[in-house]
Length: 448
Image (cartoon, rainbow, N blue to C red; front, side):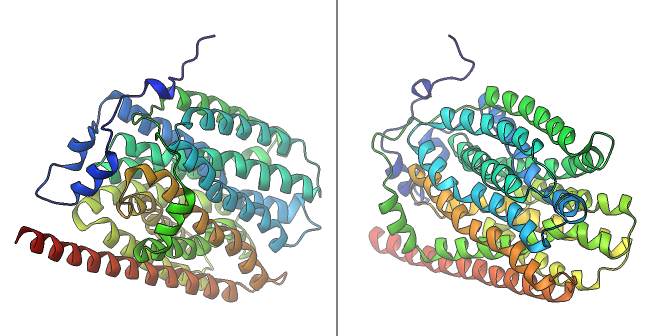
């Protein structure tokens, strides 16, 4: 039976000694890296892959970013016997698995199993969404298993591969291409809250509303799989995670980036999960509260599209540092949330600058990876570490929040952790610059 998905064996062949070319590309006297690797930097397959990855992110993290709708609905209607902190664990485990499963899926991409991983992940996404629609009110563990664990693993299988595959087609334009890809999650986070709020709280109800969203995801994921294309051949030898972990743990800049990402995710998911509930409990109209997440995600969409171009001029590290600093400051501003205007300003500004951080995560790890054959593994490891922040952020902040909804305690804690993440990004930049200066001295001595 024929299939619309090309096999990995038919991928365009790349130079055999890829690792050496990457290392040599660090020497400005040698050829450009994209030329050395034969990367097209454009074309139908390249931009088609970007579009396919965009749709994967739209249906994956875009759907997860709308968990604030479920947090509000579960807290006030569907899981009234559970605390806000317990409900937040559903979304947090979901986000953690999406990021941490990348350790497995990233390695499988490096080994040439991109297409099977994507097909299985997309099928499981639709399956577990339909399972979620069958859960009953106050069936906490049913929802936890289907939405928290099942959907998290399914999206996790597609998340890292959809980002890493961009490196098969782009080097000079990689930041822009990856920025477009991750903007898909922001566009999904704009549309899904509106759709889910109207479906779940409207005439269709929870079960049929979730099924409708599952059907939409199924169609988009099918189109995405038709567009995705690999270029580089599978690695002749499987990437040793022991070796990658050993090398990564000795890379100070890489470890600072990973810890910074985890701290950022801690604050990010507090905002994403609790913004709508915060708006509702501060007496704002239900209609406006429903759109608070849409405002937040609209800012994120613009931020993720914009920073790819900005980073081309100021650099990826500088972009991620400034974006994380401002987004951390906006988190503290949630203490003053009390009106529709304050919600709109906080949601839009935090969405924009946090979107800049999210868009630069993949490119930041890419430029810190000396061997292109390790990109999938290194991104997977970094996202798994970042997943710890997404796992702990909302539940711990929910514990500070308590059932009496003491917002300032949770806000101060989330903002402080996020600020620590900004400090780690500054450390990443410092170590990276010191390493470059050291390399320049070595090259000068070699020339002499």
